Amino acid sequence: NAGVTQTPKFRILKIGQSMTLQCTQDMNHNYMYWYRQDPGMGLKLIYYSVGAGITDKGEVPNGYNVSRSTTEDFPLRLELAAPSQTSVYFCASSPAGRGGTDTQYFGPGTRLTVL
Amino acid sequence: GESVGLHLPTLSVQEGDNSIINCAYSNSASDYFIWYKQESGKGPQFIIDIRSNMDKRQGQRVTVLLNKTVKHLSLQIAATQPGDSAVYFCAGIGSARQLTFGSGTQLTVLP
Image (cartoon, rainbow over all chains, first blue to last red):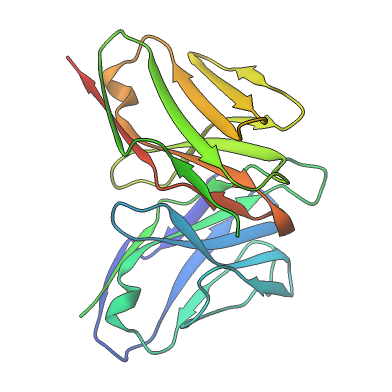
């Protein structure tokens, strides 16, 4: 299993541009999550999904959108990039909801800079 | 609201010594806790977890202790090695099965 994969690894955006961060997991997990991590800080939850077709807001959803059309994929969309969105973005998945644990498994991250 | 925090942002230990990283939480309803290790430039990596019906759990060279009375948990690393240098996060599961992360402790292993 590749686990959780994210693309791209790095990206620089100009203010007002849009982009989609891709996340795929091959562990057949129902639950998926998007976090952002600012320098020296812990992770903050942006959006999460408990299954295909279901998404919900986390702690810091403003400026982002998500969709979950398949179990495997959970893309994160930035419509109008702002400097405040400069961060490292992590996707995670969890076997929770199928009798599995709540342990979340993380991808390698996408480092985004908005100038 | 829920919060999970750590006592010290940095910790330095000599190679071979034991390390203890502490964490406090505020939500009494949290029933599951996880310790993650994050190396520079990488995503968080699962180390060990513990459910609220336990007060101790051991893994390979790591032990997590949970004190629900004072809402405190700790991660103990035995015989700390250079490869243990990383940022360590505790995270708690609260409502809606969401993880709340602390701000992390940077562990530095000195030769």
